[in-house]
Length: 131
Image (tube, one colour):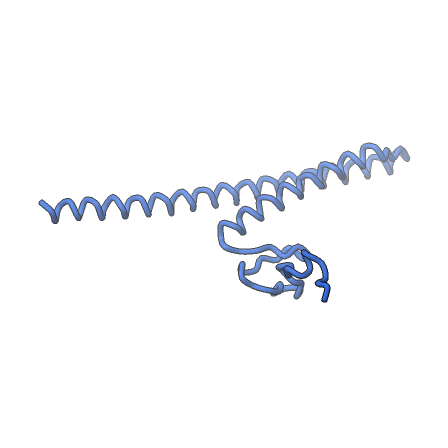
């Protein structure tokens, strides 16, 4: 009966590993769906902003308050999108360049797209060393 118990234990271990992989896949899929939803909402907000500007130009009644509110909404959506993209990158062992937004492998020193330094040196964080 020892062989049967080993088979059952190995099967349970394999099932646990598969379950964890499936959870990670589902989490990544949910993040991608959220990112697509936020992108869609950003597009809708830009369209609404364009309508506001068009109507205001036609009537010579441009409201800065309405424009400011639309810009603020779009900026908040971009912040949400950045947070989602950062979560996606973290789950796929990637780092996002703060300058251009390109994905790079997490151990890269410089961005593959723009060349920006991806990790700050300890010296920059602490300030210059005194001799």
